[in-house]
Every structure is written in structure tokens, then in C-alpha cells.
Image (cartoon, rainbow, N blue to C red; front, side):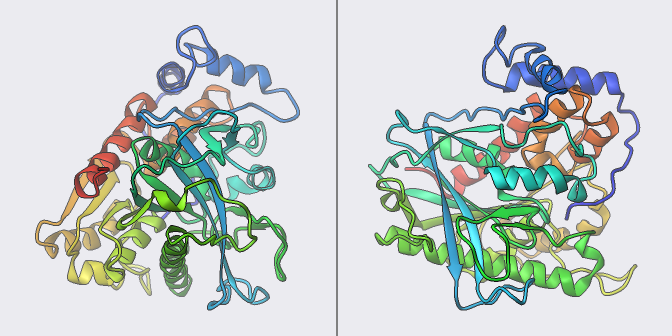
Length: 427
């Protein structure tokens, strides 16, 4: 679970972190030496825009796989559930983004990381969830992905489907880097927002009880409030299973979008729902592991530093383990953590439990020189913010750790991709 108070980390110098950010710009961002992404290019671009009204433009690292990727969004409505956070909303709404290998991208525009309304809300309130983020100075609406909106899907064969649940308070859009990487290697990846929990969600239409852009109701660490945390995780599990239900309708040739918006050509034919995985960060990692335990349709899961117990009822007491920790996993489960997560000690009992009770089907790995946010787009974005003077060295260390993103971003990609390639291979 994301911690809501920035912390200092010893031994991290501002000069070293700034140099790391410059190297990351050269090695990770498109353009190569001499271009915008060349040595100093991204930093110079950031500083030149720092005084403009909109702020600097941040860039995401390019995926490395052989496939060009398309992208679309789905507006999904579960009429069997009311919204758990807003009594005035009579149904449960979910927004999802689908990344997929494209047959062609010619003539289809590159998508933005965030929609305009979501970016505006994030710029105003993102620092409430992550206090390391600047209050101003970044144009969150300007960041582009490497995927093309509405491009036709490559449907020569059906592909494994991976669902992503973000961290508590985070939007699905901050999982773009890893989602595009997986899609570029042949997976269909569906990133899921959990409205009311996510920092902001923009919907394509109006609904009673909410504005078009719905902000988060999180104001502190949900682990401090056991009933709240229980509702948060239970809602996320139900959301994830509901999205999988709607993907089955898509694979059967129906349009699951509640607003009836057109879908990319052949998208449903690209889905192989006999091979489904789920991965998630923080609260999303909890969601991924427990959803797999509860839903036999899911064949493998990755927990990116999420607790596997419920929030303790009182300080100093142990939390009740989720069933996946109490009984173990009978399908492949990867637990991937960092050495810089302040909650490591609290995390340890439930992780040890699932490892001991899974008969070798669960495995654990660790990233060193990293912190909790390294599994998100912040791994690439925080160095650019720090290099532009919009984030302190301590803030970056707190959010993603001091590791050079030229190493940390490929490391996260490698762990997750190799796990799914082993257990849910693209054929």
C-alpha cells in the first residue's frame, strides 16, 4: 500500500540522482543521442518548459518487443452492484484500457497517457496521494504513450490476456510503461481503474451521483482503517472479476462498452481467455493474488509488493491473512518486492505464509536500490521531475528509490515478462 508521507533516505546525494536522471533520459527515452532523448535532451526540454503556463512534458520509455501496439478504452457498468463509496451512484462503473498487438498503426494517432480531464485533476490533486509530486510545473496532459488509438488488432491468433490493478490511490494510467512492454511482446493487457479509490477517473458520459471526472476519496493510508481497507480490496477483487466477465462477452463478438462506443477491428478475436493472468501493484498486488485464489479462470499472478493480510484491528496486532496466504496458491504466483519499502516488516508474515504453503508454486524476488513506486511509470517520470527541479532527491528516493531507471525499468519488465512468458506463453 502506498505510504502518504515522504521520507528521507540516507546516502542518496542530489548530484548522483540528477546525473542518474540525465543518463536515464539518454538510455530509456526515444530519440537516441543527439535527439530530444539524447544526453541532456530531456532535461533541457524540461527546463525550457518549466516557465510556461502548461509546464514541462514528461516522456515514457519505449517498449522493446517486436509488435507495434494499439490501445482503446472500455466503459463497463456492473448493474448488479451499487458503488461502495458513493451512495448516490446506483451501479458500479469501471474504466479499463486495453493494449494489444496491432495489425497496423498507420493512420491511427498516438494516444496520450492521460485524458485531458483526468490529467487536469491529477495535476491538482496527485500530490495528495504522493506528496513527492510537484503541485505545479508538469503538463500531465502532454505525455504520450507508444500505442495507437483504435488501431486494428492483430488477430491471426488468440493471445494471452493480462489484467492489471494499480496501487491504492493510483490511476491505471500510471501502469502504462509495463502494460505497453507486455503488449509489445504479444499479450493483450487490460489495465483497470477502481473509481473512488483511483486518484481520478474520467468517464465518457454523465451519471447520477458523480461528475465526469471522479476524484479519489483516499486521504491517508487505508491500512490505518481496517473496515475501509477490507472494502477497498473486496471492491477491487469484484471489479477485476467483472472486467474478466465483460472480456468474455468481447471475445464472443459482443461490444461490452456501456456507452456503445466503437471498438478496434478484430479486438475480440485477439483474446485467448483460456490463458489469463493478473498482476498488480501494492493494493493491486493484494488484489491480483487473492483474485487468482478465488477465480479459477486465472492461471498466474504477480504481486508487486502488496500485503496478503487484512489491515490489523489495532496497532501492534497481526492482520488476518487473506485465504491465499492462509492456504497457499495452487497456481504460479510471483511476489516481487524492493529493499526500500518502509512496510517490508509488516509485509513479511503474509508473504512467508504463502511461500510456505504453496508447494513451490509461489516464488519471491527483490529489486535492490528501489522503493515502492518503482513498479509504476514513476520509475521513469520521477528522474525527469527531479532533473527539472520539480522533485527533490529525497522525494525521488522515497517514491521510486535511488536506482538508475536505465536499470530499474528493464529489471521490472524482465521479472514480469519472464514470469508470464514461462507460465502463459505467447504461441
